[in-house]
Image (cartoon, rainbow, N blue to C red; front, top):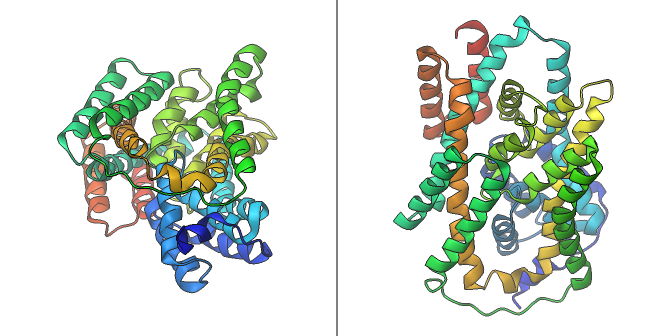
Length: 402
């Protein structure tokens, strides 16, 4: 076993105070999405603090990109675990996530308090902002994940299937089908490596993976049988967090399919929150805090926001904690890498279908809207303007120009 790999897998428990201060700072300043977050994390913990070296950091990033869930938030959890055990992992996640979660809950409460024509303009701007943001995500992910004809075809077939058969379970089925197609297409093209399992807390890791699977199966049954709204919310957000491959933007179609058709909130509310989530620091998954606050309207709506936030992040924590000791063996398996290629291609198709409906129809309602969205997309594609600035510009344009 290489020293770097062993360093990734073995925790070195220390005080959690430095963990809290470091990740709270990053939670306040980390704009730019998951790729930018990875850069911030490397600069802070490899270059500045030397908590781990480049090889160990790269191994963590590889693991978190392999698993479903928000990759940058999973790297945060893994670094916290390596530094200060489970307490450090939870502290790191809380400090990195709460600044943007608080902002998103405040936005939801403000939207409820100030309704009507006073906010209609900038809400339209926020919905319009979702168009270039998601289009940029589709383009960037497509270039990275669909690098041959077979994967381009898989992505387009997934998008077409969702256009004609929309729904949360259709998305799940398409991602699974993409994984199977990837296994068939690529399993013989990937070189086989041999690795041994590093020593570690395998029983605790296996228990975490077991809990992950049990919740994924049991929550839908509990939601259906109990009829309790809180359990239904937990099921929707946990399932979305457990099935997101390819980046935080993919949570958009998964959550919309769970929340909008049942009438828990409107497309206007959903897309306005998604637009606002682009303008705050930290992980995009804090969009769940906004959604939970909106669908639990009332004096304690913020508690619903925190509950939905916990539900969407819980699968990522269980997966990282459970996968770390087994990662070296899993990553060497050709079948796993092949399946992931196909699943990622299907994810691009899922996001493309979301761009087609509801994002374009809800956001673009006139020629000025289309021109503004095209100009914003051009700014994003050049990478010269940060996402939060583009969102702020379109929100202002919605209020004063469009």
